[in-house]
Image 1 (spheres, one colour):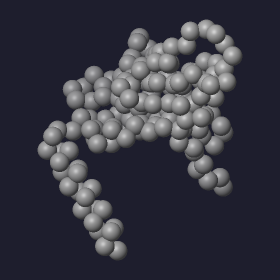
Image 2: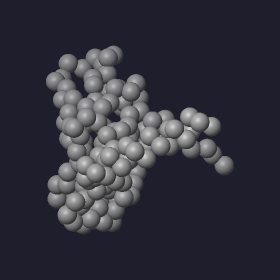
Image 3: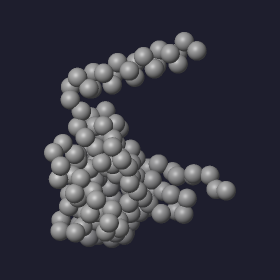
Amino acid sequence: MKKNTNKILSTNRKVYFNYEIISKLEVGIVLHGNEVKAMKNGNVSFNGSIIKFNADEAFIENMFISKYQYATTTIDYNYKRSRKLLMHKDELRKIHIKIKEKGYTIMPLEVYINHKGIIKLLICLAKGRKLYDKREYIRNRDIKKEILKNY
């Protein structure tokens, strides 16, 4: 039996604080040229990235992937271009129906390399937290830290 040997390249930590995660889904992502090597070096960031639907397809926008340092191409490189997400049609339909409901959104959580060496994106269906929910989250987190610190 194989161990789960996913190598996490980048995480979106703000999602865990600002949103309540309802469900998670692993999807593929379409990458061009040297983006794969740049991502494997950890040159990826989720700041301000969102997932949008266009017809029957999902795209991640504003995900920053820096240019691979050893790339020899001289073509203009767009760091924050839209990248298509690869998922089954039934998964896409379920998520699209769910985000039409008030308060739900879909956010990228992390990008990683799975055990087969393929770059995958973990997305989540989330609901925004109110200010008092965030305070309660901070309070519970601090209590857990104190408990662990005392043991």
